[in-house]
Image (tube, rainbow, N blue to C red):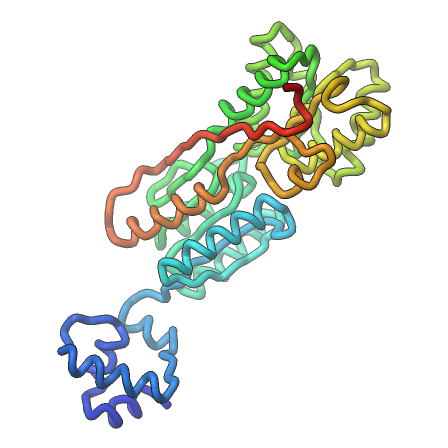
Length: 333
């Protein structure tokens, strides 16, 4: 069954069928219903590529993430697809890894599929050099680009970010307020978001009288077991710490394991905070105090902004919002 068959059975022109499929108001209610009845009986599904020729849109967007197994990115994918579906858009997902050439190749693949917009999940898509970001800026010359928790200045580029610096300072302040004397900070990478979180920890530490706060931050790029080993090495090096502020919940879980293996009581002897308010924090025993950076809210805002941009409305290049602390069992009451 094709559009020509629909036209013949409904007794209308092909142009009229096309108008009905594209939601045009230039069709009488009676004629529209006649065409829709034939479509329903035949089970006809319009070809997306053919439909895009007349509407100039595929109603499809591209989503790029580096690693879909990452809990934070997996959450963002779920909420983005849900909101896009609610707005009658489909999505194409590409897991790029962290190599710049692979990021560029996947972006070009999505552009070749005539997607209407691009969503980048995470600040690791932003390169440290201006030249490295040309792949994003060049794409933005063709279609709108939305960065989730990343920031890049450029025309047709829209950043939706949690204020990670203030949030990280707030949750470090919580550790001090609950009796911590010498916390340390664990992070994975100093991306745009990573740098802001680290600055928040250092600002809080300095405010509470720790002069060498930057020397109390440590990179932990590996899995949970690696985090335990790194904490053991920090302890053996002579650095005293009675709390860990972690850049994500998986790192925080590693800190919990370290404390329990060393016979420390949580939170009486040792306190831990995480970040992202993920299922990992909830499944930990004890449950981890964490920062809710409101991934669902971020994705909802991003899709709403996309709809406005595609509707030729003015949208600010940067939308910033606040996170909130979720207190559970790894900090003192």
